[in-house]
Length: 363
Image 1 (cartoon, rainbow, N blue to C red):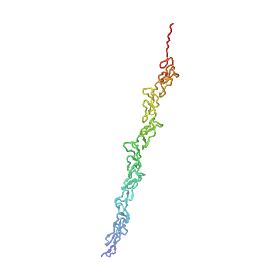
Image 2 (image 1 turned 135 degrees about the horizontal axis):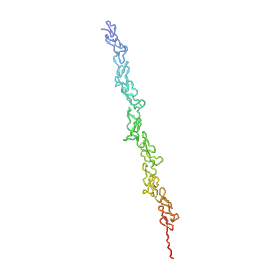
Image 3 (image 1 turned 90 degrees about the vertical axis):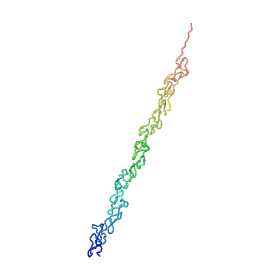
Image 4 (image 1 turned 90 degrees about the horizontal axis):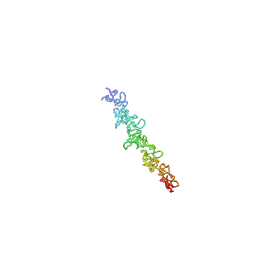
């Protein structure tokens, strides 16, 4: 009938040699028995020192169940092993299909180093992620601290849409940014207007109105010195004077003198019709007659008649002393005596005496 399992020889007194077991010592101990010589029970093959990492069972012939590895199959494969069941090598835990995005190392338990993310940690975080060193999520690259000014999106790689700038692209470009089209165009980071400012505004963001006394493109144009008021203020865009014009000037910008024949505030005053000249021209500010007065008038505006005893150019001619009346009054223009002549004088100015002809008697 032979020997019991584990023994051999004619007398069945010899134990199976090292590495063998069972009936007639015909079975080899499992190569996964622990120890250098893979020793096992000579009778049933049970490994004397247990199993090598990655194996289980009395004979150490079974690999660890899926998801387990190592000595006694007591360790779990990393949850970051790629694949639906997170499989790994039954012996050393190396992930069979590599790592999920965001992890590295043979066991896939190390996160990507700072600044990197994704599959095999071979993607670089966006340089426009906010914060020092632009940190991002090690798995998907989403910026941990949001985006630098001027960028948006999970990865902070998209510039702000036209018309917006700054943190979270929440700031609107100034409506006073110059440029074609209805959308205000400015730098997506700091809001600087690409094409400068519309007339009447200045500064990088074009939100400052021109200072008092200036207007137009880049606020380089000075308001007219003839704008009314102490500071000659005018509209910051078109330069029209806020308080109207000084006397003697007209037009929106108050740069045009009154038309000939007019003067004063709003050019509403008419030059005196006693001013010399075909157009009765006078000074556009104060109405002083340019060429003086016609005979018979005095004062700067040529509106006052000569005083009672004077007439003519500049009222320097004296009425004749032979004009009738106490004051010898005469016409302020031509000197004609108002009340006629004293007895013995004739002509309009009463300067010519009568000639008396006396006939002599015949002797």
